[in-house]
Image (cartoon, rainbow, N blue to C red; front, side):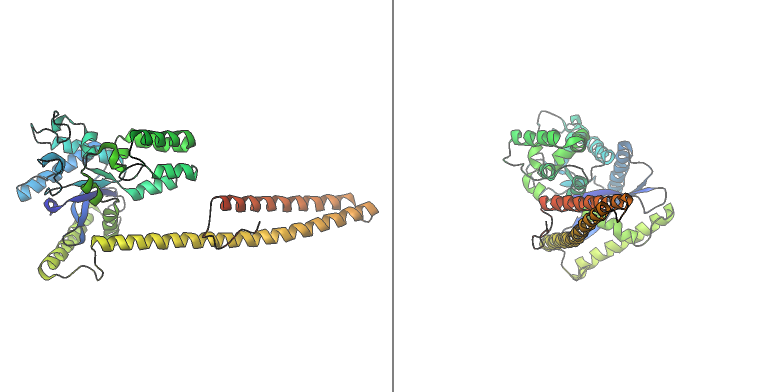
Length: 386
Protein backbone atom coordinates (compact mmCIF):
# COMPACT_ATOMS: atom_id res chain seq x y z
CA UNK A 1 0.00 0.00 0.00
CA UNK A 2 2.88 2.39 0.71
CA UNK A 3 3.93 2.09 -2.94
CA UNK A 4 0.64 3.83 -3.79
CA UNK A 5 1.40 6.76 -1.47
CA UNK A 6 1.99 10.23 -2.91
CA UNK A 7 1.89 12.71 -0.02
CA UNK A 8 2.83 11.19 3.36
CA UNK A 9 2.94 12.39 6.95
CA UNK A 10 4.71 11.03 10.02
CA UNK A 11 4.49 11.62 13.74
CA UNK A 12 5.14 10.06 17.15
CA UNK A 13 2.43 9.04 19.63
CA UNK A 14 3.44 9.09 23.31
CA UNK A 15 0.32 7.55 24.87
CA UNK A 16 -0.34 4.38 22.89
CA UNK A 17 2.14 1.96 24.50
CA UNK A 18 3.54 2.46 28.01
CA UNK A 19 7.28 3.12 27.91
CA UNK A 20 7.44 3.18 24.09
CA UNK A 21 6.99 5.74 21.34
CA UNK A 22 4.76 4.76 18.43
CA UNK A 23 5.96 6.08 15.06
CA UNK A 24 3.36 6.20 12.31
CA UNK A 25 3.82 6.85 8.61
CA UNK A 26 0.47 7.59 7.01
CA UNK A 27 -1.47 9.75 4.64
CA UNK A 28 -4.74 10.39 2.90
CA UNK A 29 -5.49 7.92 0.13
CA UNK A 30 -6.85 10.28 -2.52
CA UNK A 31 -8.23 7.46 -4.63
CA UNK A 32 -10.33 5.84 -1.90
CA UNK A 33 -10.73 9.09 0.07
CA UNK A 34 -9.63 7.53 3.35
CA UNK A 35 -6.79 8.12 5.83
CA UNK A 36 -4.50 5.11 6.11
CA UNK A 37 -1.43 4.04 8.10
CA UNK A 38 1.30 2.82 5.76
CA UNK A 39 3.72 1.72 8.47
CA UNK A 40 4.10 1.79 12.24
CA UNK A 41 7.05 1.08 14.51
CA UNK A 42 7.83 1.32 18.21
CA UNK A 43 10.86 3.26 19.42
CA UNK A 44 12.44 4.01 22.79
CA UNK A 45 14.20 7.18 21.60
CA UNK A 46 13.71 9.95 19.05
CA UNK A 47 17.26 10.43 17.80
CA UNK A 48 18.12 10.89 14.13
CA UNK A 49 19.93 7.54 14.10
CA UNK A 50 16.89 5.74 15.54
CA UNK A 51 14.68 7.20 12.80
CA UNK A 52 17.22 6.34 10.08
CA UNK A 53 17.54 2.71 11.18
CA UNK A 54 13.75 2.36 11.47
CA UNK A 55 13.05 3.84 8.02
CA UNK A 56 15.72 1.66 6.39
CA UNK A 57 14.08 -1.38 8.01
CA UNK A 58 10.62 -0.30 6.81
CA UNK A 59 12.01 0.06 3.28
CA UNK A 60 13.57 -3.43 3.52
CA UNK A 61 10.24 -4.97 4.57
CA UNK A 62 8.43 -3.21 1.72
CA UNK A 63 11.01 -4.61 -0.72
CA UNK A 64 10.56 -8.14 0.66
CA UNK A 65 6.77 -7.86 0.35
CA UNK A 66 6.53 -6.15 -3.05
CA UNK A 67 9.90 -6.67 -4.75
CA UNK A 68 10.29 -2.90 -5.03
CA UNK A 69 11.84 -0.24 -2.82
CA UNK A 70 9.81 2.81 -1.83
CA UNK A 71 10.15 5.37 -4.63
CA UNK A 72 10.82 9.08 -4.05
CA UNK A 73 10.42 11.74 -6.72
CA UNK A 74 13.71 13.54 -6.17
CA UNK A 75 15.61 10.23 -5.99
CA UNK A 76 14.04 8.18 -8.75
CA UNK A 77 12.32 10.53 -11.24
CA UNK A 78 14.10 11.30 -14.49
CA UNK A 79 12.77 14.86 -14.75
CA UNK A 80 12.63 17.38 -11.90
CA UNK A 81 9.27 18.66 -13.20
CA UNK A 82 7.65 15.23 -13.36
CA UNK A 83 4.53 15.87 -11.28
CA UNK A 84 2.96 12.56 -12.33
CA UNK A 85 5.75 10.47 -10.85
CA UNK A 86 4.55 7.24 -9.24
CA UNK A 87 6.00 7.45 -5.74
CA UNK A 88 6.24 9.76 -2.75
CA UNK A 89 6.13 13.42 -3.75
CA UNK A 90 6.11 15.15 -0.35
CA UNK A 91 6.55 14.37 3.35
CA UNK A 92 4.90 16.52 6.04
CA UNK A 93 6.24 16.63 9.62
CA UNK A 94 6.33 18.74 12.75
CA UNK A 95 9.60 20.42 13.70
CA UNK A 96 11.18 17.59 15.68
CA UNK A 97 14.85 17.73 14.71
CA UNK A 98 15.62 14.06 15.34
CA UNK A 99 12.83 12.90 13.04
CA UNK A 100 13.70 15.36 10.27
CA UNK A 101 17.42 14.64 10.27
CA UNK A 102 16.72 10.90 10.42
CA UNK A 103 14.52 11.20 7.32
CA UNK A 104 17.30 13.11 5.54
CA UNK A 105 19.92 10.52 6.44
CA UNK A 106 17.62 7.71 5.32
CA UNK A 107 17.02 9.41 1.96
CA UNK A 108 20.75 9.88 1.46
CA UNK A 109 21.31 6.20 2.20
CA UNK A 110 18.57 5.24 -0.28
CA UNK A 111 20.04 7.42 -3.06
CA UNK A 112 20.70 5.43 -6.26
CA UNK A 113 24.41 5.00 -6.92
CA UNK A 114 25.93 7.14 -9.68
CA UNK A 115 22.68 9.12 -10.18
CA UNK A 116 23.02 12.88 -10.39
CA UNK A 117 20.77 15.35 -8.64
CA UNK A 118 17.94 16.84 -10.71
CA UNK A 119 18.56 20.35 -9.37
CA UNK A 120 22.36 20.36 -9.25
CA UNK A 121 23.33 18.08 -12.16
CA UNK A 122 27.04 18.19 -11.30
CA UNK A 123 26.47 16.55 -7.91
CA UNK A 124 25.63 12.95 -7.14
CA UNK A 125 22.55 12.36 -4.98
CA UNK A 126 24.75 10.52 -2.52
CA UNK A 127 26.82 13.71 -2.09
CA UNK A 128 23.86 15.75 -0.87
CA UNK A 129 23.63 16.41 2.87
CA UNK A 130 20.60 15.13 4.82
CA UNK A 131 19.19 18.66 4.91
CA UNK A 132 19.61 19.10 1.14
CA UNK A 133 17.52 15.95 0.69
CA UNK A 134 14.87 17.47 2.97
CA UNK A 135 14.72 20.60 0.78
CA UNK A 136 13.47 18.36 -2.04
CA UNK A 137 10.59 16.68 -0.18
CA UNK A 138 9.77 18.12 3.27
CA UNK A 139 6.80 20.28 4.32
CA UNK A 140 6.42 21.73 7.84
CA UNK A 141 3.05 21.46 9.57
CA UNK A 142 1.30 24.83 9.59
CA UNK A 143 -0.83 23.90 12.63
CA UNK A 144 2.27 23.29 14.77
CA UNK A 145 3.86 26.43 13.31
CA UNK A 146 0.78 28.49 14.25
CA UNK A 147 0.55 27.20 17.83
CA UNK A 148 4.23 27.88 18.33
CA UNK A 149 3.81 31.50 17.23
CA UNK A 150 0.72 32.04 19.37
CA UNK A 151 2.63 30.91 22.47
CA UNK A 152 5.56 33.26 21.74
CA UNK A 153 5.53 36.40 23.92
CA UNK A 154 5.95 39.05 21.21
CA UNK A 155 3.81 41.86 19.81
CA UNK A 156 1.10 41.20 17.24
CA UNK A 157 3.17 43.05 14.65
CA UNK A 158 6.05 40.60 15.14
CA UNK A 159 3.64 37.63 15.07
CA UNK A 160 2.29 38.86 11.74
CA UNK A 161 5.85 38.94 10.40
CA UNK A 162 6.40 35.38 11.66
CA UNK A 163 3.23 34.18 9.94
CA UNK A 164 4.34 35.82 6.68
CA UNK A 165 7.27 33.38 6.45
CA UNK A 166 4.82 30.58 5.63
CA UNK A 167 3.50 30.23 2.11
CA UNK A 168 4.47 29.94 -1.51
CA UNK A 169 6.04 33.33 -2.19
CA UNK A 170 7.08 35.78 0.53
CA UNK A 171 5.82 39.30 -0.15
CA UNK A 172 7.30 40.41 -3.52
CA UNK A 173 9.35 37.22 -3.89
CA UNK A 174 12.77 38.84 -3.53
CA UNK A 175 15.62 37.74 -1.30
CA UNK A 176 15.77 41.28 0.10
CA UNK A 177 12.15 41.09 1.31
CA UNK A 178 12.86 37.75 3.01
CA UNK A 179 15.96 39.05 4.78
CA UNK A 180 14.13 42.24 5.79
CA UNK A 181 11.41 40.19 7.50
CA UNK A 182 13.96 38.06 9.34
CA UNK A 183 15.79 41.21 10.48
CA UNK A 184 12.50 42.76 11.67
CA UNK A 185 11.65 39.68 13.76
CA UNK A 186 15.16 39.66 15.22
CA UNK A 187 15.18 43.40 16.05
CA UNK A 188 11.59 43.85 17.25
CA UNK A 189 10.88 40.42 18.70
CA UNK A 190 12.77 40.80 22.01
CA UNK A 191 14.39 37.66 23.45
CA UNK A 192 11.36 35.45 22.79
CA UNK A 193 11.27 36.47 19.12
CA UNK A 194 15.01 35.99 18.68
CA UNK A 195 14.84 32.55 20.31
CA UNK A 196 11.96 31.61 17.99
CA UNK A 197 13.85 32.69 14.88
CA UNK A 198 17.14 31.13 16.01
CA UNK A 199 15.34 27.84 16.57
CA UNK A 200 14.10 27.87 12.96
CA UNK A 201 17.56 28.71 11.63
CA UNK A 202 19.39 26.16 13.80
CA UNK A 203 17.04 23.37 12.67
CA UNK A 204 18.51 23.73 9.13
CA UNK A 205 15.26 22.63 7.52
CA UNK A 206 12.30 24.58 8.97
CA UNK A 207 12.44 27.75 6.86
CA UNK A 208 12.81 25.89 3.54
CA UNK A 209 9.91 23.61 4.56
CA UNK A 210 7.75 26.66 5.29
CA UNK A 211 8.20 28.74 2.14
CA UNK A 212 8.49 27.36 -1.40
CA UNK A 213 10.29 30.44 -2.67
CA UNK A 214 13.30 29.96 -0.40
CA UNK A 215 14.75 26.92 -2.23
CA UNK A 216 12.25 25.96 -4.99
CA UNK A 217 13.41 22.34 -4.83
CA UNK A 218 9.86 20.96 -4.95
CA UNK A 219 7.81 21.49 -8.15
CA UNK A 220 5.34 24.30 -7.66
CA UNK A 221 2.24 22.19 -8.39
CA UNK A 222 3.41 19.45 -6.02
CA UNK A 223 3.95 22.03 -3.26
CA UNK A 224 0.39 23.31 -3.74
CA UNK A 225 -1.04 19.77 -3.71
CA UNK A 226 0.99 18.56 -0.73
CA UNK A 227 -0.25 18.41 2.87
CA UNK A 228 0.03 21.74 4.66
CA UNK A 229 -0.52 20.13 8.08
CA UNK A 230 -0.06 16.77 9.79
CA UNK A 231 -3.75 16.65 10.68
CA UNK A 232 -4.24 13.30 8.93
CA UNK A 233 -1.64 11.48 11.00
CA UNK A 234 -2.86 13.26 14.14
CA UNK A 235 -6.40 12.05 13.45
CA UNK A 236 -5.11 8.51 12.94
CA UNK A 237 -3.41 8.75 16.34
CA UNK A 238 -6.67 9.84 17.94
CA UNK A 239 -8.67 7.07 16.23
CA UNK A 240 -6.36 4.45 17.71
CA UNK A 241 -6.23 6.06 21.16
CA UNK A 242 -10.01 5.60 21.33
CA UNK A 243 -9.32 1.86 21.24
CA UNK A 244 -6.85 2.01 24.11
CA UNK A 245 -3.83 3.81 25.53
CA UNK A 246 -1.09 2.88 27.99
CA UNK A 247 -1.02 -0.62 26.46
CA UNK A 248 1.68 -3.25 26.73
CA UNK A 249 3.98 -3.58 23.73
CA UNK A 250 2.27 -6.80 22.62
CA UNK A 251 -1.17 -5.28 23.14
CA UNK A 252 -0.19 -2.26 21.07
CA UNK A 253 1.11 -4.45 18.25
CA UNK A 254 -2.02 -6.62 18.15
CA UNK A 255 -4.46 -3.73 18.33
CA UNK A 256 -2.46 -1.84 15.72
CA UNK A 257 -2.63 -4.85 13.41
CA UNK A 258 -6.38 -5.14 14.01
CA UNK A 259 -6.88 -1.44 13.27
CA UNK A 260 -4.81 -1.57 10.07
CA UNK A 261 -6.68 -4.65 8.83
CA UNK A 262 -9.96 -2.87 9.48
CA UNK A 263 -8.81 0.16 7.44
CA UNK A 264 -7.66 -2.12 4.64
CA UNK A 265 -11.08 -3.80 4.55
CA UNK A 266 -12.71 -0.36 4.29
CA UNK A 267 -10.53 0.47 1.31
CA UNK A 268 -11.31 -2.83 -0.37
CA UNK A 269 -15.03 -2.36 0.27
CA UNK A 270 -14.94 1.05 -1.40
CA UNK A 271 -12.90 -0.26 -4.32
CA UNK A 272 -15.15 -3.27 -4.95
CA UNK A 273 -18.59 -1.98 -3.93
CA UNK A 274 -18.29 1.81 -3.94
CA UNK A 275 -19.31 2.05 -0.27
CA UNK A 276 -17.66 5.02 1.43
CA UNK A 277 -16.35 4.99 4.99
CA UNK A 278 -18.64 7.87 5.99
CA UNK A 279 -21.88 9.55 4.93
CA UNK A 280 -20.23 12.85 4.08
CA UNK A 281 -17.89 12.92 1.07
CA UNK A 282 -14.14 13.19 1.77
CA UNK A 283 -13.11 14.80 -1.50
CA UNK A 284 -10.40 17.50 -1.35
CA UNK A 285 -13.01 20.22 -2.04
CA UNK A 286 -15.23 18.92 0.78
CA UNK A 287 -12.26 18.88 3.15
CA UNK A 288 -11.40 22.47 2.25
CA UNK A 289 -15.03 23.49 2.79
CA UNK A 290 -15.11 21.87 6.23
CA UNK A 291 -11.77 23.46 7.16
CA UNK A 292 -12.98 26.93 6.12
CA UNK A 293 -16.26 26.43 7.99
CA UNK A 294 -14.33 25.40 11.08
CA UNK A 295 -12.13 28.51 10.79
CA UNK A 296 -15.17 30.78 10.44
CA UNK A 297 -16.91 29.17 13.41
CA UNK A 298 -13.70 29.27 15.43
CA UNK A 299 -13.33 32.99 14.70
CA UNK A 300 -16.95 33.56 15.71
CA UNK A 301 -16.34 31.73 19.00
CA UNK A 302 -13.30 33.91 19.62
CA UNK A 303 -15.37 37.04 18.98
CA UNK A 304 -18.15 35.79 21.27
CA UNK A 305 -15.65 35.13 24.06
CA UNK A 306 -14.06 38.55 23.56
CA UNK A 307 -17.46 40.29 23.57
CA UNK A 308 -18.36 38.41 26.75
CA UNK A 309 -15.10 39.60 28.31
CA UNK A 310 -15.92 43.21 27.31
CA UNK A 311 -19.38 42.91 28.90
CA UNK A 312 -17.78 41.57 32.08
CA UNK A 313 -15.22 44.40 32.20
CA UNK A 314 -17.92 47.01 31.53
CA UNK A 315 -19.95 45.68 34.46
CA UNK A 316 -16.88 45.76 36.70
CA UNK A 317 -16.01 49.24 35.45
CA UNK A 318 -19.49 50.59 36.21
CA UNK A 319 -19.51 49.00 39.66
CA UNK A 320 -16.05 50.27 40.66
CA UNK A 321 -16.91 53.75 39.30
CA UNK A 322 -20.02 53.86 41.48
CA UNK A 323 -18.02 52.57 44.47
CA UNK A 324 -15.36 55.20 43.81
CA UNK A 325 -17.92 58.00 43.78
CA UNK A 326 -19.44 56.65 47.00
CA UNK A 327 -15.97 56.29 48.53
CA UNK A 328 -15.13 59.90 47.65
CA UNK A 329 -18.33 61.11 49.36
CA UNK A 330 -17.50 59.03 52.45
CA UNK A 331 -13.96 60.47 52.52
CA UNK A 332 -15.29 64.04 52.31
CA UNK A 333 -17.80 63.29 55.06
CA UNK A 334 -15.01 61.85 57.24
CA UNK A 335 -12.87 64.98 56.70
CA UNK A 336 -15.77 67.21 57.80
CA UNK A 337 -16.46 65.14 60.92
CA UNK A 338 -12.78 65.06 61.90
CA UNK A 339 -12.54 68.84 61.35
CA UNK A 340 -15.59 69.36 63.59
CA UNK A 341 -14.14 67.04 66.23
CA UNK A 342 -16.92 64.47 65.88
CA UNK A 343 -14.58 61.69 64.67
CA UNK A 344 -11.09 60.67 65.65
CA UNK A 345 -8.20 60.99 63.14
CA UNK A 346 -7.92 57.17 62.88
CA UNK A 347 -11.34 57.01 61.20
CA UNK A 348 -10.19 59.50 58.58
CA UNK A 349 -7.08 57.39 57.88
CA UNK A 350 -9.32 54.35 57.47
CA UNK A 351 -11.53 56.19 54.96
CA UNK A 352 -8.47 57.36 53.00
CA UNK A 353 -7.06 53.81 52.84
CA UNK A 354 -10.37 52.47 51.56
CA UNK A 355 -10.51 55.20 48.90
CA UNK A 356 -6.92 54.45 47.80
CA UNK A 357 -7.79 50.77 47.30
CA UNK A 358 -10.81 51.74 45.18
CA UNK A 359 -8.63 54.03 43.07
CA UNK A 360 -6.12 51.20 42.45
CA UNK A 361 -8.94 48.85 41.36
CA UNK A 362 -10.30 51.54 39.04
CA UNK A 363 -6.91 52.11 37.39
CA UNK A 364 -6.34 48.36 36.96
CA UNK A 365 -9.67 47.79 35.20
CA UNK A 366 -9.25 50.95 33.09
CA UNK A 367 -5.80 49.80 31.90
CA UNK A 368 -7.18 46.34 31.02
CA UNK A 369 -9.99 47.93 29.01
CA UNK A 370 -7.60 50.23 27.15
CA UNK A 371 -5.24 47.33 26.40
CA UNK A 372 -8.00 45.17 24.92
CA UNK A 373 -9.43 48.09 22.96
CA UNK A 374 -6.00 48.90 21.50
CA UNK A 375 -5.58 45.25 20.51
CA UNK A 376 -8.87 45.36 18.59
CA UNK A 377 -10.48 42.76 20.81
CA UNK A 378 -14.04 41.73 20.10
CA UNK A 379 -16.37 41.84 17.12
CA UNK A 380 -16.90 45.61 17.31
CA UNK A 381 -20.55 45.24 18.26
CA UNK A 382 -19.81 45.79 21.96
CA UNK A 383 -17.92 48.92 22.98
CA UNK A 384 -15.82 49.62 26.05
CA UNK A 385 -17.44 52.08 28.48
CA UNK A 386 -14.45 54.32 29.17
